[in-house]
Image (cartoon, rainbow, N blue to C red):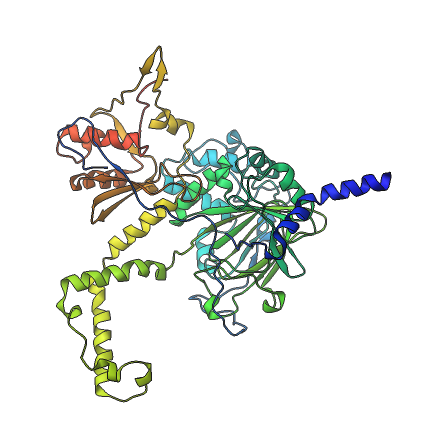
Length: 579
């Protein structure tokens, strides 16, 4: 009887994984990762909210690197500055004694004389302190400083960014308290909106085999925790969609990077590994939240794998060589490694691991910028310079091409010199600023929407007290006057772009917390309103009176301010209406 009961328990314990294996069999799938112009004669400005094409999902591309021979790279290979040894800052972080607070821990910002204790500790207290800084750019810089502390950001950028791993041991298990926890993971599952594949991956790596065990449909707690109990790792692909704190954290940090800041969380059972060795196409900041994890990091194997455009396929242990860094991360520690550095992490037998990987700089290189710039430069050259429209020599096929590459021929020399001349001249037609604006437009589509504090809500359309009462709507009119003082909600939430269809103002306030769930949001403005947008940008973080906007008439000033307020782009110095 007891044996039968034990057998039944064992059957129940293995059910989710066993069922998956039967259904998926040998062919299991594996995921590698991841308005109209403003009228001058109306009281309210009209604008069409145009929709661009929606982007793709948030998973990372599955692109194996090109085949290359294995080489042992020297320490300084393929980077502008020497690739220095990883830095272990345990001594620096703990030099003041066991009771000392890390220098990068939450503390009052320079602009705020109140002590940090009034805000509490951990990440929640830090975010409350940051909210008292008027300038969103300063908030972002302070958060980045806190993330790296006690390393100074300038030193990090000089020695490590895109160059070498960095290990920070803080000896402070509560450093990231409140950012994300296993309790938050469980709450997300119980919220009923997590789906396998879309939001959650169930993975394992054993005996050199990496598997993804995702069923279809909703990720219910009973099924998810059964997978975990049977040794599977859990990767939550977009914790910012389920955690307001992660959303707040990333929405600030993205302004510092000028590039999308994303995150995955990884929960791994004791004594297991969830992923094969691989390298990524992002700059990775690993924040150990709970437990501990054993990490091995390896330098790029070839020049072609230094700062790669795409993530690698799964790698095998014999392909790796010796690690450049091997460590056990504990709660409060930080590990950074650049894109292209191979890495793998496994749990020790005595503890689970929960970490969050904050990532940025995916497809954000000079080469990616030139992909936007060069086609536009060539188009302008074709339109403006007859030299680019002249025909090729009639006989060029006879002496050009690979088959003729070793031929000594004056015609070949002239042809190559002509191509070089046209390429060099192409720089004169390159619309560099316009290409930057197009990159910024893509970045704004990638961005998380800003998370507002209570005071910001009260001063924006999101706190406006319009409601249904006594049989009809009340408090509906947004009464902006010439004396109303306004400013942008954040410095980085808008971008002006001159496009063929007109002047577009792209903005982030209506983005989704799920990557590209919403299409790009923009307003089409008459060109005469660009000066007012630029004025608001240059005035930030100061408030300006609506009367000072550089529009021709007061009516236009109020119309523009009202439109931007309704889109959440502008806030007022004082609430427009009392609740």
